[in-house]
View (tube, rainbow, N blue to C red):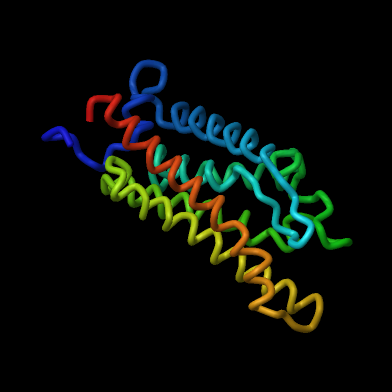
Length: 212
């Protein structure tokens, strides 16, 4: 790291400095939040439904950890909250072009109350966790970027799985935790590893290009 460069700076601070027309925090933050929600919407279009689980494979979690690292904890969490708000307003920003009120894989329940809602609700917290670690400079070396991205992915998997178990128990009167683990967590670990690797290589590479 270049002497004198604080790890509290995020890549967004370097790429989109707060000067000129972006000197006003509300303008700069608003544009970055808009860009982040657009990225999430595009990555949500990468969605592969699986017949044995209500949880699809999507590109959303890659967007969450990237936004957290690029924006830092505050702006990263705000961006993902704005993304959820867009879904609550009925915009088709979630996987497969759904909104919060689209039918879920369980008849009669909208997406925001369905089995995958826990994953969505985990997004702001996961972005905050990754952003907090990025503020400490963890996104500048592959050796530290990997655990930072892993922390964010674990937040999403843990909250999503907990919600899925609770929803299943509520709807059916019981939940086979081992079976749900095999259907809703284990099949996604290889894809999670790929996303972590991509983000952990891209961010330190970006810092090197910026002269860090």
